[in-house]
Image (tube, rainbow over all chains, first blue to last red):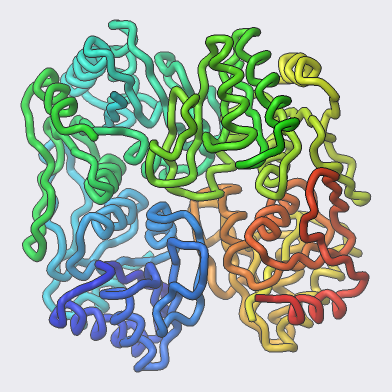
Length: 154
Length: 154
Length: 154
Length: 154
């Protein structure tokens, strides 16, 4: 199971701990972690996954593998900037959003657009009255998030 | 002024009329219209712009200019699927969202991420408690939308 | 007719003159010019097209329309770096390569891969013994190049 | 060491054997194999790598991991069509081209443009008189190719 973890490039300690926990739980269940490969939530999630011996894949925006955080096993170098967000969404079988700003929201939107389940931890609340659309699945702990990702992942 | 108009590939008559009106107002003020080049909101906005002699640019997802709606003057053929949404956001000096589903939301998120103003007509409501972020500027008529785009566009 | 002109971001006077002439001939025949929007061959081709009142479209690699050369009418801002070379190839009905380095070669390869005719002025010579493939159409003057683009463009 | 192997989506038995051998040698030396994830040269190279217990990464053009060949361990789903060729070039520390058509040539051009060494087995011959440019390093056996990739890879 390939699970994406998305969030900002820098984050508070509290959100970082949550991301670390998510990464660790993914690895404990034998999943691979996909992320944007940079700092903040991405780095903490990768660190958590490595603490449990998991595999981590970083889909990088820039031109060099050296921009990956230290816990990325497999750097994918896109050179495409934020367009790489599509790839994070498409390559994951489920996505866990940990808080996040507008970059994260673009990934949430892509994932839901492509029919991927999105599990939310302290993340965006979305409402669009005109259409009935698949929602973000809200949870409150890292372990609930990973459990939901395994349950709904495709 | 290059103004992006974003929304779904098929839409109700009511939303279509709104998009048409937005396109017409953009052209009446001398602006160029940028969109995803397909049907629904994109087609109606282009039709509106052409009714007032405007210039329309369609950033297409597929491999052929022939997928553009009939009102696109300049087809840009990306072959990149939904990754082209980044280009709509970056090429516009302001974005007007007319309703919309998750594809539209990805464009809204990209635009706000890149510091572009987003004007909303019957579109997404967004909330993220962790951060103070630039909001969608909500308006209720096409003419208010275009006025706001001109006021805030960069 | 939308004709792509491709080449390096800086160039000798001689190659620049050739690119200028190509741009001017395209505009004189009523064509639109598509290019990567930057300097060198791209800038000279745009300048030539504007000297004859043509329309110029620049598919830019970076995040800002301000990187376009002064002769670009319609900046398309991709934020995708060299991945935008695909878009230049796909959006053109024929491509004219004026000299060029490896970036230009990637566009030539994409264009031929997508079945677009490529006209070459002082550009790459290619040979691959294993396959019968459509060749670059070699010409020696700007006016021959544009004539071939009109003849073979699809 | 991450080594890219590039070539066509279908190929002759002879070229397939060469690709298989290249994949096997990469894995025997402990390298990871990156490719476009589809059939032909890509599939044979992945099969060779798996025969020696290597790790294989497929950068896919479409929207689903299911288009990967059976020997891909890590499918990266881009949804970007041929624009994914940039990612193969950027993610590899060296590229081995086995024969190939225009898609392969676009990857060769990107790799050389980005300063990546390209090792050629029965592949394109390139010539551009105007510039002094880094050449394809021509070799004749799979084991020479992998040795050169290790020697020149960055």
